Length: 192
Image 1: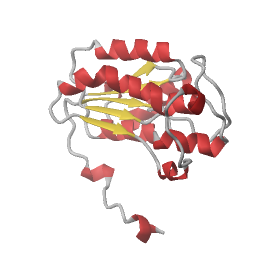
Image 2: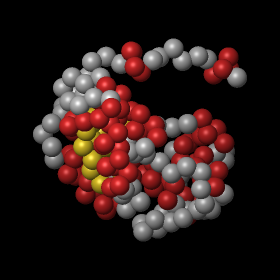
Image 3: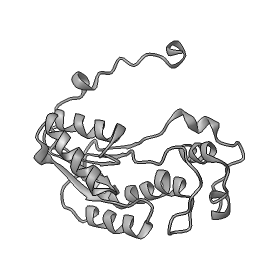
C-alpha cells in the first residue's frame, strides 16, 4: 500500500524551520491533527499559535498539554462554533481586526463520518463545519495573510473526497442538505 501512496520522508520534528516571530491560527487545534499542528508550531518557536475550537474544557486541556512542546504562553484559545455562521463571522471579524500579520492559517477542524444533522443556519452540519465556516474565516483573514510575505493557507482534507458522488454540483442548499448517508456526507465536504 505504501508503494501506491509514496513514502513521506518529511519529519516535522526536524524538517520544520524556526518559526520565531510567525503567527498562526489553527481551527480544531485542541485535539487530533490540529493539536499536533499546534504542538509543532510551538516546538519550532512560533510567535503565536491561536487555537479555534468550540469546547472550553478541551481547549484548556490542550493548552495545558502544549506546555510539553514549547512556550505555552504563545498558545491562545478563541471559542469558535463552526456550526453557527453568525458566531463564526463575529470571531473572524475580531481576528481580522488585529494589526498583527498572520503567517499561516490552518483550516483543520471538521466533523467526521456521522449522521445528518442541520445547524441553526439550516445547513448540513458536515458541510458547514468542514467547509463553509472555514471558508468564511479564510475570506475575513485574507488581509492579515497578505500582510505577511510568504504566508500560507492549509485546508485540511483527505483521500475520502474520492468517494463523493460524481453528480455533486454544490449549486444550492437543497443539494447540500440532502441526506446521502454518513460516509457520503463526509466525502462531499472533502470534495468541496
